[in-house]
Length: 216
Ligand SMILES: O=C(O)CCC(=O)C(=O)O
Ligand SMILES: [Fe+2]
Image (cartoon, rainbow, N blue to C red; front, side, top):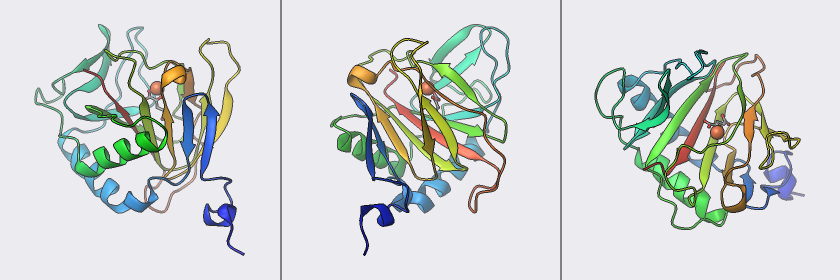
């Protein structure tokens, strides 16, 4: 008999509350897979992935690009949102309609109706790449949630509390999963453990993460 678990690919319930204001929507992006990947190709052609440097001088293992009215950048001068891609000196590629529709509808499902992101950070993890525990706090108004879409290789997401030393839960994320956090969880510490090597049928040895935010 087809129950919720078999429909969700034996991964557990389609919707999982991680904390107050934080929801995992399993497989939520799968229906838009083809148009998301086609749009992604367009973004990367115009604004290639690059490994940026932290203010402390470390080169990030995750390669990044952005689309939308601003892009998240880091260099020796700090973290910030920039209206122009520093590589090209031109505006970032526009946010594709399918990106915006997925982000706004997933946010609404998670309880954040009216979310209107103006930036999407595109993260590319190759095997071994990781993102250490951090808070997203470079945005002007922390009243808006974050919508995070996972594509390609599976990863172990860490979702902690509001203090750096709160023990994070380990949340396995797969192709098509969407995590939304805001409200009381907006400043939750989170990160991604080093990506294990394998191959994804559509994205090869890569995990792509789309992080939607209202930055400006
Ligand atoms: O790759 C992820 O799942 C998280 C990315 C993230 O936390 C960020 O870009 O700030
Ligand atoms: Fe983050």
